[in-house]
Length: 288
Image 1 (spheres, rainbow, N blue to C red):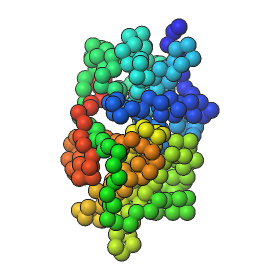
Image 2: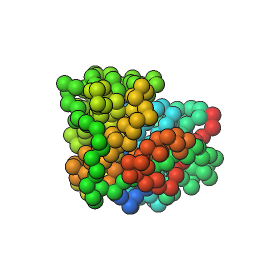
Image 3: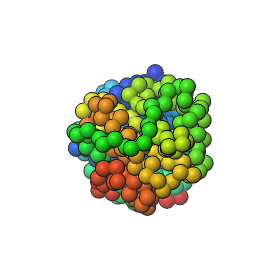
Image 4: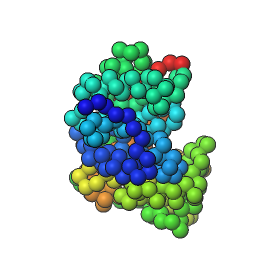
């Protein structure tokens, strides 16, 4: 059977998220997580469906891609299909040719599991490696130590607190109350939590969203930020520890996060919260 490139539509997003849950494994390399789709859902279900691509054979989804940007495809592949040559060659053709409706013309990036055959084939087709990212993981077999600050789970009534911390943490953030509600309406958020940390004066100083992939699966932190006016006081470590505890309560086997290796402050924050760095990963890019 031929490999079929498709878009799931809003009605098919549940199947896509289900496949991503199934593919998560503590022994696997860092890969596209259902929480990545959940975080994108802040733009709405229709926009999320339009950003997702699937590759299927005989009705079975073998690969899923999320267009985080028109020039960035975050791609993952079923564990038993990562060395499937027919699939890998089809993926390379589809991401290389703009007319296939995946990536635009010009400089573009593809994130894919490091051991997958598609990595080698992209290199053979002239794609180069981009700057490194550091994945980090914390095992959740043991209870997580209290973070030492007040941390609250954010519901719809406090959405404005969560979004305000996000905008104060990331320059150019467009996270609004409306987008929080859109994200919370998505199916991945059923197994997610937004947390906000407060200082001794009651100021909201840090925030994180955590995404479970189900019991016994790795959970994701995406995103985590510290208010720019409250940095340097350990709030990043505290909210990260609280995130790990929340994922453990949700049944996650581990907590994972990924950050640019150049962001040494973020790597240090995660390590201080008990996360261990894994081997660096790199996108593949095609020059303009």
